[in-house]
Amino acid sequence: MTQYAFKEKELELIPREQLEELQLSRLKTTLSRALKTDFYRQRLLPLGIDNPEALHSLEDLRNIPFTTKEDLRIAFPYGLLAVPLEETVRLHASSGTTGTPTVIYHTKRDISAWSDLVARSLMAAGCTKRDVFQNMMTYGLFTGGLGLHYGAEELGMLVIPAGPGNTIRQFKLMKDFKTTVVHATPSYMLHLYDKLSEVEVSRSDLHLRKAIVGGEPHSEDIRRKIEELWGIEVYNCYGLSEMNGPGVAFECIERSGPHLWEDSYIVEIIDPHTLEPLPPGETGELVLTTLRREATPLLRYRTRDLTSILPDPCPCGRTHRRISRIKGRTDDMLIINGVNVFPSQIEEVLMRMKEVGNNYQIVVEKSGALDKLTVKTEVTPEIFSDDARDLNAIREKIRENLKASISISPVVELHEPGILPAWEGKAKRVIDIREKSV
Image (cartoon, rainbow, N blue to C red; front, side, top):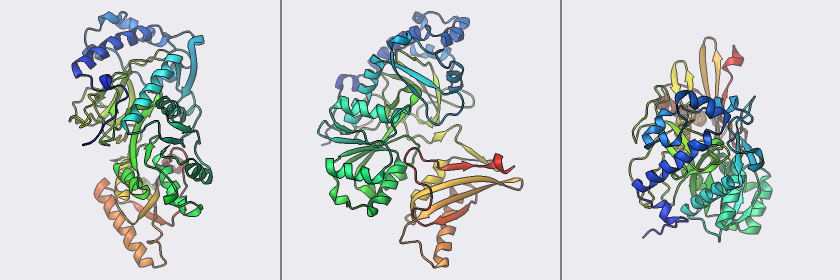
């Protein structure tokens, strides 16, 4: 019989009715905090939303407008701060932005609540204080490194704050300290495996049993590939800096979709075009409302991430609903000659093929008046040969499989292992140079 571990058992197994009562209570507190910010006062008071007691049910949340990333930029730097600045102890800014960043402030209690959530998540994934946790995610303004670091310490794990890169040193740390759990992007886990043969360490020298992966969307096929290569369990972690960072949702040992911690967030799924709510099982844009954050409360934040609520209960018994693997972002979708294509669709096709290696890249450019899609992929060392006929057959097989999935016939380039750029942080899989081609 499967043994499940709970850090906060009563809260994790709380009946739905009680959970929704807790959400409503915390939502009123969040609205009260939001009304202390310049941004939400200007947004909500003209709508007559000036009293948290006007919220009689969770459905009343729909009377509040959505908050967007652009709103956070408009409110920069202090327009969304709900506490005096001297009560804040840390800020994080979302990675990869240009121009005005999106900044989230944290009080001491915010950091503590975030750490508790991550510790709860790690325990749900089967981690214990006996584990040695090697954190290979970026530290700094990006939330991935510090978020898991504090949570792992809260759980009592021995934490190695390795950060990304320096592959030789990563293996040395794993071997010397008998690392059992690692945290990295999925692309870096694949890159590490490719480098295993270049260092004086064999897989049998390592004590790895689990990997926590996040920081970039990835398919179920990527997860299976990492598990098969390393012989470990791989857990999907979801988060975004606007909602703290990692630990918003996390897989339990069932590995069948991350539980979104609903005592800390209200979850909605909306149609990104009509903005109407969608029922469980239907894919749409994830919208989240913070319920415990003091410094920077956010109401109905549009994440741009595409997912769905999984309708069936999890065998672990947790009542916090699960979301499906993130399909992509509404702003990541590529429109190629009028056809909608998500990079995740291409990844799924590639990772199912035994001939394909661990790295790929998608390039979109103009060819005359039309869009041209090129998929570059490394192939396994066994496949790459001087026989042009073999490579041509593989290239055609990949092209046909991609065409069947995305309705577009791409150009397929095959490369030797190690040729395409390797990424120590978030992988840059898509290069869209159509504007530069004009």
